[in-house]
Image (cartoon, rainbow, N blue to C red; front, top):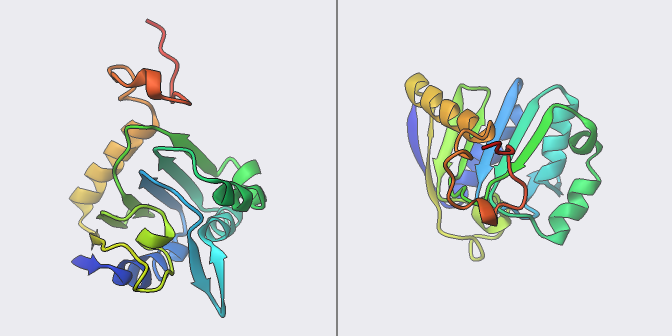
Length: 177
């Protein structure tokens, strides 16, 4: 399967339906991150609560982003105990990240233009959303390549030769040269 999703379809046909179905792991890579909300039953709740629920159910969640989120995100984050206390939640910051990708259980992924924000991926009204595009796919070869790259990023493989180190507020690895 290789399917193009545009605008709100990214939210309805991937974020809202597929992301909460993760059973083993969920990897999210984004440049920008804000207090994104999603529909849940008859109410809206922060995506962080969905991630917290996943971690509580045993799903390993890895979040890689480029800059510190704003105060509303941090307030929501501080209410999610599993994201604070569980070893199943991992978060790193790399100011060079501009990728927008979500991998679910190594069997499905979304790669596109949308950041992890309400205007990009959230439940905002159609007249307030960004214009976004991306692809959902389950091709094993592409998934393996994407996951290998995300893993290398997460493990700090690119830190050794990074020429932007002075702009990194929280280096993934300490360099001993």
